[in-house]
Length: 590
Image (cartoon, rainbow, N blue to C red; front, side, top):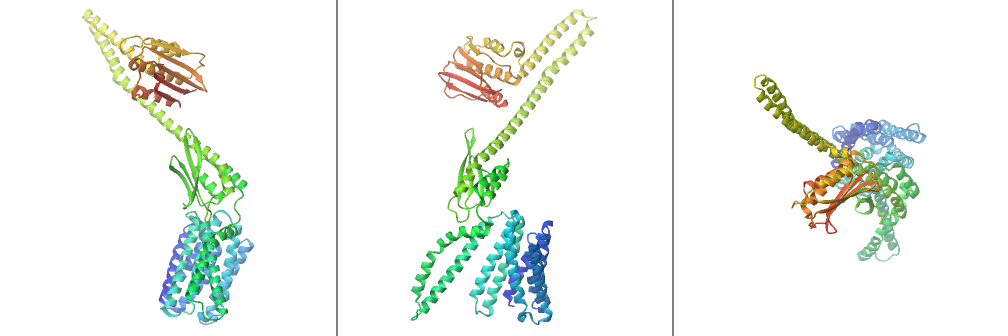
């Protein structure tokens, strides 16, 4: 063997050894990993020992190439030795490999060993038929793993065949380099086996297999056509065909190369992987397995339709992806409600120019389900955000109460206690001073009571409990004055209101009072209307004034406070200029 050939074998052995060791690290892949690693070690040992120990190198090459590596292919991805076909394949591969190894001792030099060719052909035929049978019988992850191995073996085997074909009759360094490159190409097989087991979706292997087989078939067909055409021209006799004639023939054949590929794609795809999924069956599978996880939903759609890629976009942002991105895609709209839209982007299969009618039918059935699932997810995110805001607001309110009690009411009550002690101590000796202290004590107590009332009012206006929502609103409206001191005339319209929850009642009161206060301060009018009504399961609070309100309102603390109170209940608030005056409309779900 030349130096170039030994380098190619060493590269193959190293790649196989590393990939086999990686498979051994996975407990589920011990059966194919062990012979793969040992076979790579045997090839690497043979390449390194060839110059010094040729007999050892020959034994390592035969052991690795005829026994260990075929065993790894037979056991990949899983070996069910109790199945008749798997058991027969295991027996044939093991027996042929052992015969090849044993032949080293009783047939002479390995180059002239007549037994190696029959065993090699037996191993190749058994491996091909067994792999084909496993591809037909397996599904799921095993099928994708086998597709990866078959693709790598088919590509490297085809390229190696063309190299041998091109080197026909070549000798010396040129032949050594060619064969060395050919041996080195097989180094991709073992990594492909690892990828097939643990990362099968890194690219669309189905599309790669179809493209590789189509390309190889087309090349072989046109090589045969070209050779046949040249042989036919030679048979006609006369002068050999000129360069121009053969160039014209090559151009005509090349013009038909792409159409033949397109025509073969569907046939080869169906031959290798079966027919496309039935639309109704695929739609049922999608409907049954479509969950709340966008990535899982996309994977379900992609696997049901055998698509290389699927992507989900909301508002121009990619929310989830599945598969390997491809050049040609189609986007389908998703309606999410509340003015929001999304897109389901799917990649076209290799060779397809558009989605088939069956694919579109399945996607049309799946889109509403996907949109509903996505909308539920978005609403859940909004609910979580609302809960976080509510908790934050509660904690802020607690902090405010603690601060007010500690900094305001606490010192005042402490002062009352100290003053009462001073009055008691002073009373026997100086009654007038004690009386003065008691007068101050009463004033402090009255101030403390007022502070308590303010704290209670901040949590819930007492008038709501004493009078009810509508009378309390009317009472508060009577105290409002415009910027120039005139009383604000307020007309309150509220009829047939059902019993309201405490939170809704407080929010309605606060929003209405704040809106009327804004009208008194900023509108310039002395008339306002407030209405409360129930519509579509919500309490609608509306306040209108008739002042010269500007068309663009400046968002201040009052307007922000009203929006926050409505949002805390899951409602909404709209404020602006309408119908010659200011208008505030709050919708509070009941």
